[in-house]
Length: 247
Ligand SMILES: Nc1ncnc2c1ncn2[C@@H]1O[C@H](COP(=O)(O)OP(=O)(O)OP(=O)(O)O)[C@@H](O)[C@H]1O
Ligand SMILES: [Mg+2]
Image (cartoon, rainbow, N blue to C red; front, side, top):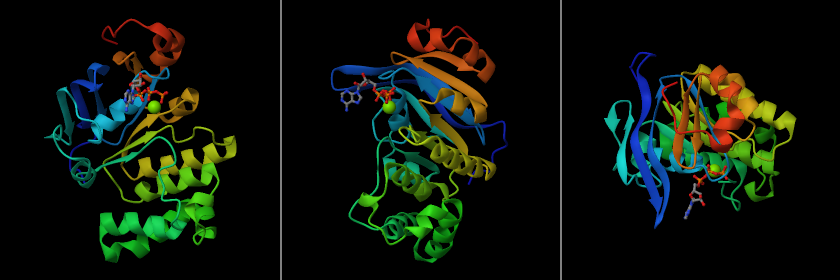
């Protein structure tokens, strides 16, 4: 865990570019996430939000620029190393093992991250945050509802007390009451001192807990500043804003 003060950034992207083959998805993306803060990362479909998450967590290499985690350059690190260094990434979609039970999914994740001795406590914490998962601990994850699968994906990482948690479209397709549960869980994560990067279609929802907002437009940062400033110009920023002047 970080010993840095709250003002120190826990995650920094510096001039990051990234491509998928010939397709350039990110252009010179820079922003930072203060320790313990919540940053909402928003933008139109295809703007590059998930790519930012993948570069930060080591799933996609940066072709230029640097990623710093608690001041350490992790640009060339592999995903599992970055995870061990304190960054967790809940990817888009239902990233659970469908043929394993809820409890087997959790046990696998917790054993890997915490060792055998940490599993029981972590399971208890996960079921405390998401009682519904406790009720369904013996059910195959593939037969959970969409919302329950997202909860499972989130609970695998949220009890690990990471420095940064990157969550990609966590509430996509979820019923409003389930979104409430998810946001309650995110609030718990945050109050444990974990910084959040929230990629979210429900922009207004994300803004309720965000300390800052980064708007991406066609792979570039169109805005990096406070919530009020982003909210006031959101349509312009998301749909075709000019590349960021200083906020
Ligand atoms: N594996 C890939 N191969 C080729 N192009 C990709 C790949 N993944 C993403 N892209 C392209 O990169 C661009 C950015 O994609 P990305 O997934 O980062 O967008 P996004 O902002 O997360 O969008 P959404 O809101 O739809 O999830 C898009 O144009 C997309 O088509
Ligand atoms: Mg995406």
